Image (tube, rainbow, N blue to C red):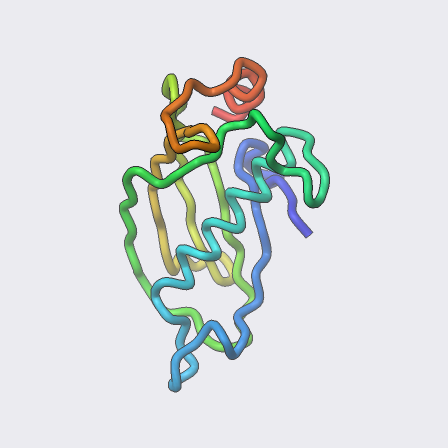
Length: 142
């Protein structure tokens, strides 16, 4: 279930359970999996605000987002069976880019934070401007 934070209506929240496959032999979440959790939250955020149904997030002429820059801070480990909350917030909208701030928390305690800049590209990989409708919908969450 995905929701917007009742305290900050522009912050998107995605609950994620830590499974055995997410952890190392000691039951601690492998560092790269935090990036996967963040990716899921960004995708669900875009699916929700762009009004796309399951399996139809991207249309033929829609841009794809590719990561251009990423900053990540790991504060504390998540462990097997933890219930995490992954947030996604729009931080900046450029002509062809989108920057988002994201966190992973457990019971309100911060475990991981990232700032990711995405660039819109065509199906052929060429940089393209964000469509006007996308820009309008994203701006409402800035």
